Image (tube, rainbow, N blue to C red; front, side):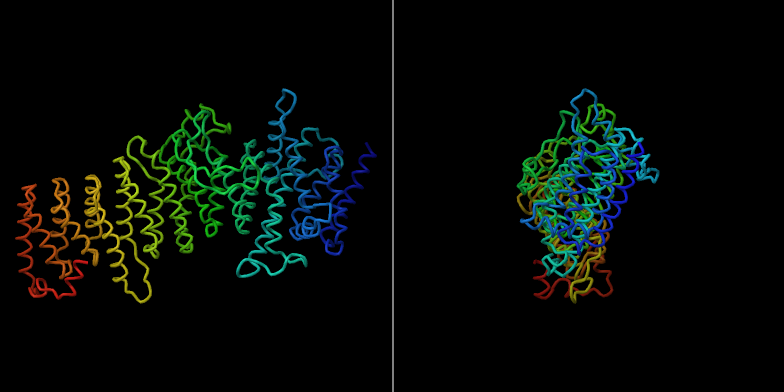
Length: 633
């Protein structure tokens, strides 16, 4: 009783003095700081009394929050091979041991593991809400039950770990922002925070952090505690990304992907394997990159999945310029999410199937935040560098290509979600459309080569959205070009591609899809076209030459729309070409109705030309050589 109370009071005084000395005078103490660290670590050991462990852990938490002290300890101890004590690494290992031992499966039949993590979650929720009490008095410690005390120790260990990772993140920001190229000149020996030291800290702590966070996240079901755990996870991944530790960053991202979705037992998704970085964290992480590409009809999203996906999107937003080929680790889950959100199957059936997490699926109404976050990733590409956006679009290309076999077996209308995301990136990045259009078009050609008509239809839908959407957006001026020149150049590029899709050897459904896109272009943007008339008229001229009743009917719809609505706005040098195209439809033999209507259109065009007050036949029919070559180019 009273003796223990007195000892507790003396310990608090000693720990308070130690904390003050460490935080204020660690630079003067030099290597003698190790004695304080060893005392704290020994006081947190499992064989010590609860009141001793609580005091030591509370002091350790304050120490972990001091990034300058953590940096000094690591440089003084961990980076010196002749010193036996690895102070920072030993602190993290001690924290991990506390968590792992408390959550280890019990030898007795009683499920102690669940009780501990549930108690930890309740304590954390109380503290997060401001209702929890710190065990600072002798009575609070002495009269606490063993289970409650053990849970409190685990909560302190989690808080210490989160503080230590936050200290690493702070050090990383300091190091990477200390010079223009992201690297400080110093080597850390004189107290300067440099990139090399931060990399060493991340490398030393990575295995312990990943293993401990992985254990806690898998067994936790509390929203409040999950938020803290994923925030810590995010801080460590972002630190690795800013430090350009690609393999370590990717190992954490791969592990994060495993929390992105829940699949009922026996319905885990098939995956496509791509070349990925080998993990440096553990042998368990040495696996190829996984992309969720099939089986999403069985998946659902619970509260833990929601937190994981939000963390993934936050990391991608922070490291957008640095991810490179690792965008695949973000876009794979995005592709799965898009598929899942388009299929309203967050049903009781999937819940009853028994997922791994034990949490119920979230209703679709709660998933709007995920849809917004995923869309924001692509909207932000407008502010990224050219190289980063090209890499992102290339990664979308790979994800879409890998998903084609599964998409071909979708019931109903086939949706190519990654291809639709490529369209979104194109529209957001009109100022670099010339750099991105080739990547998009190359994947479209790849899909159009498929034997599955549903895939070809989905590809043509994407082409139509890409072209009509791009024509509706203003084109940023490049150099001294005028607005008309800039928009005319984009029109020409887009519609030349449409013409090429038709004239190449393609399936009949593809050619019909091209003509439908042409009709949409005229309906929505006919009054604004300038240089786009050249490839569009070339496309319409190719239809009667190639033949096919359905194609001729669709092509003639475009010609009728042109003659009825846009003849007056057609550039004068294109009038002759328009009438030549009409004559081709009048001369074809496959559809008599089209022939007769085309002849009527020619008469109407002649009447229109005759009524023009400033009409000059020499301009329309005898265009100079330069203008003629422009039409045929």
